Amino acid sequence: MQKRTPKKASKVDYRLLYKRKIVDFLESLKDKEYTVWQMNESMKKLFSMGEQVVQVCLAKLRENDEVLAPVVCYALEFADNYDVVAPLMDILIMPDISDKVKARILTVLSHYGVDAGELPLNMIMKDFDRVASESLTEMLEDIDKDYFLILYILDDMEEFPPDMKLSYVKDIGDLKDERAVKLLEIIASMDDIPLAQEAIKALGKIKSGKSLFALSRLANLINDDCTRRIVEKEIQRLKFSGVQMEIPPSPVKLTNPVKIIVSSIDGLGSRALWIAWKNPLKTRKLTSMNLLLNADTGIKDCWGVPQISTREFNSSIKDLSKTTLIAECNMEYAITLIRDALHLNQEKGIEIPYQFFFWKHLLEQNYNLKPKVYKPSFEKYDMEEILNNQEYFKKSFDLFNYRLFDDWFIAEPRVYDYADENRSRKGYIIKKMTQQRAEKLFSKFTQELIEPQIHVIKRMMELSADFLDRAGQKELAKVALSALLHMNIRPLYYHPFIQRMIIESIRVALNNMKNGFDMRVNPDAFE
Image 1 (cartoon, rainbow, N blue to C red):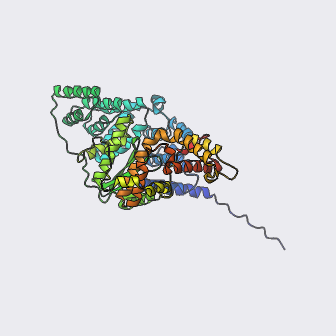
Image 2: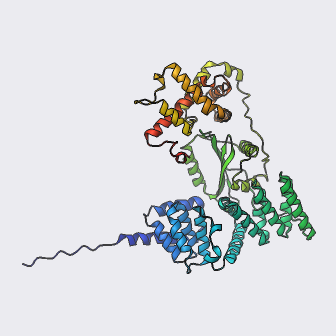
Image 3: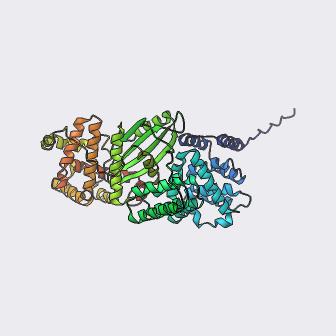
């Protein structure tokens, strides 16, 4: 009997199916309006489809699809994969790729740190000047439709090299387009003086009553004498050209905030401040300003979300609450914190994130944002009684047991030296140290690592006591106030809170080293 030959099982290349699925998903995203949150959620879904996503995106760029290019380039930025740089550079020099797609590719390369100004753009593109001009004109058209797009422009501009920023603003001015006034006025109000001056000169090129009005407002806001003289010169230039001042309507007006969230102070002295309003341009959407304020350096970061649903915003708040303590507050308190942070930026000469000036421009319609130090009021507390209450003072050692203070440890490479010097085979156990050895450790550590920044620790404690008071945690606020009131004792290492800070700092360093992380070897890994 003849043996039946088994049929070979058909082999299906599932990679082709996955590629088709990825392409279909990318196609579904084009020509759609999404919020940043929605787009990022879509990107998470996209990259869950497998390792081929990046390769498929690069392949679609090679097909020169101008409509799909914005989605693909967003995905390549989202990937945060520096391996895309080399293939993108290859696509950039392909002759069949349109200048419009190449312009999109340049934004991705800029995201990965490639300086477009260093590339031979006149050789890479068929008509770079035309593309640049068309791109700027399209940008102004988009701003005219959606004022909040300025946020993204400022965000991108902040990453440009200094020379490129100046050229960019100059090119906008050269268009002499009245629609650029809104953007240029915000740039002209920045504390980046060379850039502000270039924006003022650009406003002077636009023979428009709106431009004259913007310059007149800037004349009353700018503190730098040299910059103010440039403003006055451009005002005179427009007036001599016969331009009459025109007061434009506000592009958008923010109503009372829907919700304001403030977080506690973390171990680096930073806190989050989120403010959400009804989006004035999109129904059933919110717009939010998110700030990172630091007790020593002022406004450290600012990012806005132009369109976000209430559900998405509440979901973000829930995520934030998993990492820090949060509380709702009113706008008066929020403005007080912003003014205090601005004072620190101004006093220490620390540049403010570009995006903040967009929000500042809107907030100043209703609020005074003049820099001013915030001094919390503790009038309802008997400060003398708190100072003399030794129980509160002793309890300051246990503040680290609470979530608000559990990350208040010193994170510097030098701490790892102390950890090495004071560990045994069984680890670091302060209770087994002799009193003399422990006191020597506390004294040396305090003198070297705590006393140089005690003013910051005091401010952090003061703001934390204020946060606890506003959150209704009165007894814990008293302990925090006791810790604050005793920060001037000598020697400082007798302070229970300072002792616990030293113990926790070394404990964290030992635990990190045990897990293979040493700040002395790779400090950047801890940022």
